[in-house]
Image 1 (cartoon, rainbow, N blue to C red):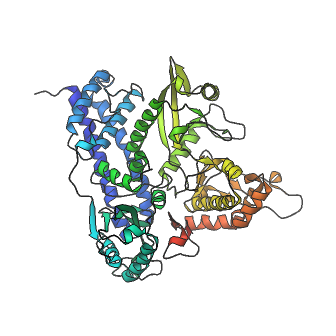
Image 2 (cartoon, rainbow, N blue to C red):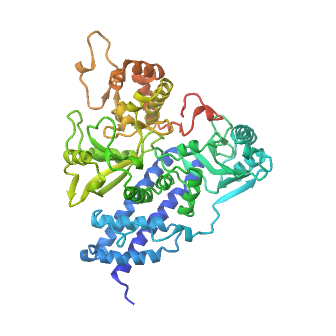
Image 3 (cartoon, one colour):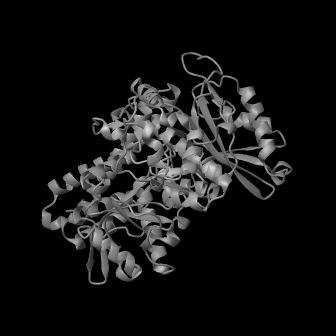
Length: 583
């Protein structure tokens, strides 16, 4: 029996997806080995390689399609509609079917340049109802507490699939138990039916391994995250492998949400059933969008699919319209928002303000750099869209007129549709300059301290923001300061940090300055027009204005050190380590 072109098309795409998934799982599976051996540089490279993998496999599969099928077959939407039907049947029993659908969509969009987005030709909506398909796979392990919290915590750590020994397990249990008993609600502490429930899979990222789950009892639940780290003075190596220790115990939903933030690198974690895994995480973090949870565990392309579906649903409600984003308008980007969706949309202007000496290609490469890099909780993740199409009446007239004026090569009208050739999306935050105008004195002091910490933590990850103006940073609902404007971002190791020469009448304008030369002593007036804010910030972070500080960070990076940046505050740690960058 001769197979139809549509069936062969579907089978070829699925073959490419299988290749992608096999390599994705291989990189992810090796995370436990990298953690065991403290191979931190390998971990950074593996994270970047896994992000690049999706695009590479889409390109490989696209090449295979173009070699296998005549152009008239590939360009025929009806054939793709038939292929979609066959593909849905082929993946109907798969545990990762939603990821497979997204891979199909990526090939369709590559062929049709993100046009003809219709559900009959691709998976605008999923082919399956998750509620009707449960795998039966047990994702969690459980232990009844029976009033013995030390024993429950001992079970949580000893039964975890770590190859390294704990340096002092009983000490960890004692510290962890004290923290649990101090912060758990009375309804759980006093309940008779309390149990600890943890996902069997370990979440690896940077230098940490995280056990994730919850505590249930008395009709209530709280999330539970146990971060496990290496050594740090808790014991020497045993049998050649570094020893482990429990670094803290986290039971607040907001704390857990920050660990899974859109500002962090993606976890390396074995995910047996992606949809059910995300459903579980959603119970721990009910306010976190599903798209962000998929991205947090490495499936950022499907996270984009979930984002797109959620956006379509929100736009259809017609609760509001797209408007120009509040705040100072950018010199490179035009930014607009749908207020009810808590997302900003950024497009590159046709012409930049004279102060900006960059090109469209450079800006796009800067955004790709941040996507691949460890964002250390201080840089917003982005999604990139091509030929984004919205009805004209979903825009406020002033907003649409502005976009058409500043980016006519990217934004166009076709009948009643607005077509945006290329844009980025990010989570909405309050611009730092606006926040400082509206906040209390105590909040001002706190957020300025966090602003400095954000700059330091990016530096630790080999990132120099370039333009450190307040308007390029935002404040999240958790009060954390995040960088989100990447057109001048570069590696710390590319910078040349210089001292201002000593002498009267000498300033930066009289010096011979190269394109990568930076004078930290001049940061103050550039960052703060308001002297009160400037003085407060300089008191909190005097080292940021000292070139020697930047040169020391630069040397540490060049020497191969992977500087620690933890996703929780130093005061929460059992091992508060002097000199390490934590929050």
